[in-house]
Image 1 (cartoon, rainbow, N blue to C red):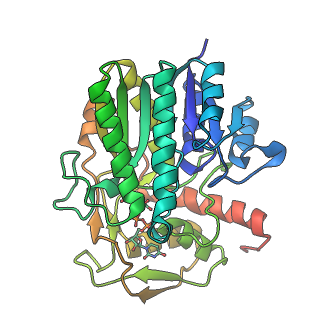
Image 2: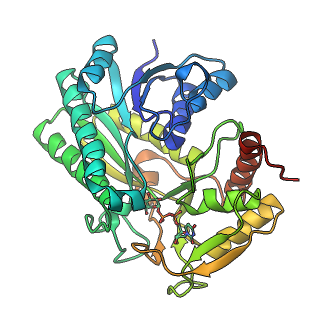
Length: 350
Ligand code: UFG
């Protein structure tokens, strides 16, 4: 029988792509999500999961649940014997976290503590945690490897990722039969090859690629480029963009690592290559065949000039390496946004 994996936040952008990979590699995902970042579809399930069920011709067990509801979580652990948990659920908007720090600490930290406690109570001792390169703060050296100092985060969102990492590390120290893989993502972009699932931010996108994609389909007038006076190739910010399907495959590699009783491990998931904002704009123009208007705006507070990974440890220890190059990443982003947003907002992209 297929091994069951609990996926918290499995209706969201990264979680839903991991659900696909789990199913395709023979695991049995059980998803919990509170719809804070997932669109509600027909039948009160996340639209992403409904579509996955359709294109993979399968059924996915879904529970609408907030991790702050500990008794609800208990009920799910009583019902299933999980081999591991993939933990994505949490609030993730940097700017919002500066305005509502207590909400971010309550939701992200308390939710994670509840999860770890319920796992402990039910003898589930394997977890993959969705962390972020944000834990490195302002890079002291590039590329960033896993030994780079952590904790210098400039916003409450980043601090919650750092604190959760520390909680899991301490817990694994105290409980020797626990295994954890903390995955520090760089900048996930793109959509699934099926064209059925992708990133669908609510409201005005905070991140570069969804914003650019919406300019490309005419949903927004122009992009504001936050600063062109950084010490980078063209003065604009440089990031390590990684395709979300590559990222999802990294989670399967992490699950396999847990099966080796690895203790607590930390890996970067990035490509190792950085691109500037203007390079991304050019690549998206090429992918979409449309001009992307932009204007230079002041720097965004909390942004760093450059951030890209040294991904070698994940290759060595997980046997995982990003496969998608810039062109394919942008093609898939552009394709997803032009089909999805046209359907969703009724605007023509012709
Ligand atoms: N940018 C713009 N205009 C925009 C949006 C972004 O110029 O409208 C620029 C930013 O200044 C930055 C680059 O595009 O130089 C990438 O910005 P994103 O907001 O897409 O990504 P960040 O690197 O700022 O943040 C991302 C995630 C965070 C995570 C961080 C980890 O959004 O959750 O990576 O390094 F913490």
